[in-house]
Length: 183
Image 1 (tube, helix red, strand yellow):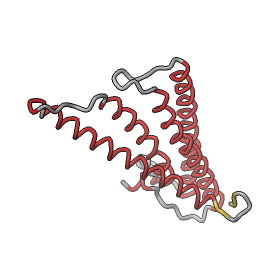
Image 2 (cartoon, one colour):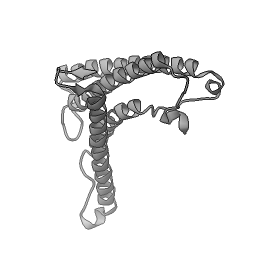
Image 3 (cartoon, one colour):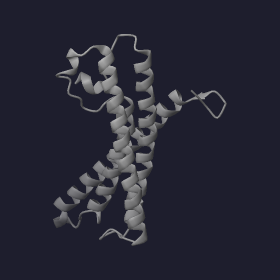
Image 4 (cartoon, helix red, strand yellow):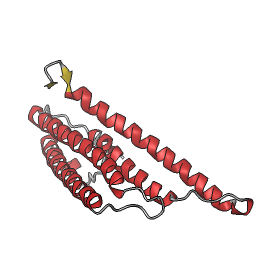
């Protein structure tokens, strides 16, 4: 599948996009963790003149929200969602592939719904100029960051759905579980 007529394949771009976003989400999560440790340490050392980081809860909320949506594309691409395989192990490979296609389509629809609602939530926060209580930064910033990651999740999910459809059509009889099915 070529993009832009230059031989760049979606099978290269989409994993790169998902991986890059997951790494960025990981960096944000590390920063949030360090911020939390410093803030808690500051609280513990109030007697020595230190204190918590002002607005730490607000920063943690925004950072963790972004991180969750940042990991979603990588999870979707690698079939990392939890799955229950009690009955499906009894089905033939072609039925399991059909279940995979249906699951991917449903997950894509759910991710699209979430992105759509994030978009409207962002517009709502923007139109009312809502800000956080302590730091007074606009709430729509956190929504916009999460929305950007959710849009990447939609792109990756559509790609993954297409991959499952191609696997179903090719159906060589063998069936490999995704990561979610291995745990």
